[in-house]
Structures are given as C-alpha cells and as structure tokens.
Image (tube, rainbow, N blue to C red; front, top):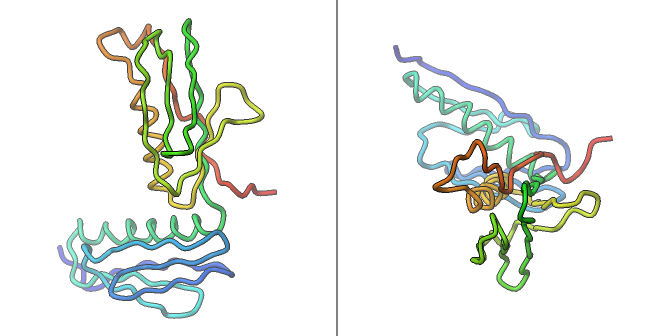
Length: 189
C-alpha cells in the first residue's frame, strides 16, 4: 500500500547550523563540520523553522518509508558528532601471550604484536580524522575518538577484526581486542 505523505522531524539544538542543498546535508557545530550526501534516497528535506528539519516521502511504499527514519538517524548522528563527538574504548584480552599495541602517528596506523605468540605484526590503517591513544586510567585499553560515528566505529571494527582467531576453537581462544565501551568525547555532568 502506498502512503500519500509520510514525514518525520529532526530537532536542531542551539549552536548548531544545518545547511541542506539538493539532499546534501552539512552540519557545523562547536567541534567542527560534517557533511553527508543523501542524494541516493528520493525524499524531500525541508526547513520549517530554524530549529527543525523535516524529512518527507511522497507516495512511498513500506521500504521507501523506512528510509525516513534512516535519514533522520544520519542527521542526528551528524548533529551529535559536531556537539559532543564519539569515543570508542577497546580492551586487549589475552590468556598467555600479552598483546602489545604500538600507535604509529607518522602513517596514522596501529601495529599489533605478539597476538597468540605470533611473530608477525598486524598493521591497521586508521582514518585521518580519528584520533587514537592509549588510555591513561586503564591498563590494556585503546581509545578512539572523532566526530564522525561511521569512521570511528569502522576503525574500531577494523582493529577488532584484525585480531580474529582463525583455525582454532573460538570458545577456548578468546584472545583479541574488543570494543568495551561506546561513549561521547564530551561527558555529561
């Protein structure tokens, strides 16, 4: 069944400017600027007031209407990224061989050594906009932070996937680097 008109509203907080031109959204806030190209989805993005953004689908089926919430979530993530940012914490887990992680700032990569006692070093390239550091408070913890949730989570997933155990029983060999916490850079009081 086709619906004639379906819409959803995204609220824009104070101190954040959102520009929309031909379904290309650009969000500017205190932490920087993020943009997203949404031209592959057929819908209207209107600005009814200064503090709201309205996403509309005309004559859409079930799957087309589901895109409304997806677009609203993308815009909300952009707004959250430029206001509070995203931070992922990863913990090293090992039973016998201690994993050592070196952060290489020259080519913006992370080098993982001594995983399951292997001599080979695993190198994971990270995006330029994602900052990586060792946690000062917690032993064996890596902290990834940035404004774009897609890039921060992709870097965390790349590090986690690089230490996947192959050709062994994964119930017994639980070694690896796992995402332990997903928070924001700016902490709430």
